[in-house]
Image 1 (cartoon, rainbow, N blue to C red):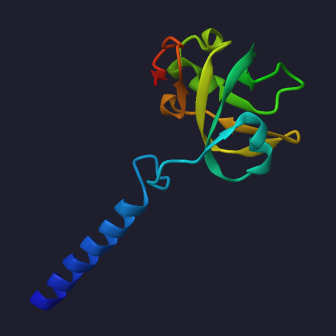
Image 2 (cartoon, rainbow, N blue to C red):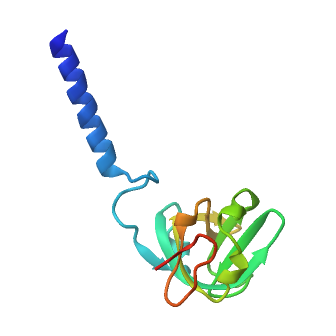
Amino acid sequence: MRKSASALVISFALAFSAYSQGTNSAGTNSEPAKKIGAAEAVNHYNETLVVTGTIAQVNVRPSAVILNFDKPSPDSPFSAVVFARATNRFGDLSKLQGKQVEIKGLIKPYRNKPEIILDNTNQLVIVGNGAEAGGVEKK
């Protein structure tokens, strides 16, 4: 019985160690995510990356807020989407227009264009001289 209990404890410890080395609190690989520009996102579907760019347009709709990168819609090469269920977490997203940002998440296609859906404020970081916007971290 004692050997079985010891083996169980060791097995659990090894499994937990392997799990914690491979993930962070968000459940993603613990290595820093690769950064790409908004125009490159189209080549990285189904990858979790950091997409950088300038918010050229903020479209506020009843069901979602769409952050278009580098150019206004329909010419924007990449978008970040915050659905209505999560907008209260982000504060006034319209203040992001003109700001340089980094968005981290899984790049998915939507209507033949890449996008990342934002659920948590830790996915969005304002870089450079941008001011903080409702819980959004400034780098």
